[in-house]
Image (tube, rainbow, N blue to C red; front, side, top):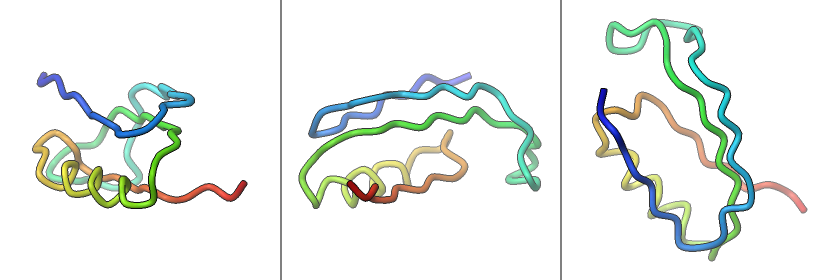
Length: 70
């Protein structure tokens, strides 16, 4: 298993580790994956930078970065 690091320009406020879960559908011949919810505060351009980095990481199957309403 590979280890990854994600650098966020901002303040990480909370990390929820949901652990290993069964995927709703098979992705790249995988049936299970690890779920993490990372809450952070940063400048408006940071999510685009993070998505750009996640897009090229081999071990990341899916990601979704959304803005929370206050």
